[in-house]
Length: 215
Ligand code: DX5
Ligand code: ZN
Image 1: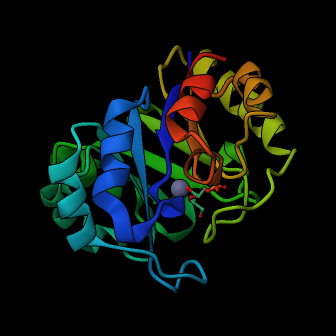
Image 2: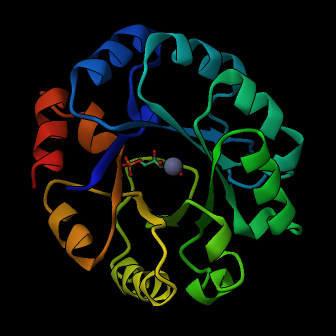
């Protein structure tokens, strides 16, 4: 069974409390929170004050995906806001090892995200230090895009790297996950499915989460 992480980006921002209640009642394991700065990605989403409030409305694991430059400047603030997992993009971290140590020292699990064009082999010297790899299966910045099929090949490469070292690092797939492709993604080796539009825009989000969970 995969870990299911609905992405709040696709929710109704006018009704965040209700959306959190729905998540609480569902079989979702984590809540995925996409933070964008308008610099690393061409979009701006939400930030610290919103996450602080989300924290009070749910006990689910808060899986914070930072699509921002200079994430080291904000790691402590995200820990304080209640993040349980903090993921930074490899493309923006010139001192990735120290960024990861900082996240872990703050008491959070550490993740590294890779854009669709970023090769798996860049992880060989950091994989032993992290809890999670977020493989972007769309270009970051927007929900509702189509899954890039080559991601399946990257999942297999990453799984090989993790197994060769006898590690238990989560493989999170982010973008374009649907009820139609989720089983194939899990079969390739994914352990965490992020789903924004598939969950929040469905007629019955609780049922959709359950369907993803029980594939
Ligand atoms: C995109 C975000 C994703 C997004 C996924 O930059 O990282 O988490 O919310 O949305 P869907 O599932 O709708 O593709
Ligand atoms: Zn994300």
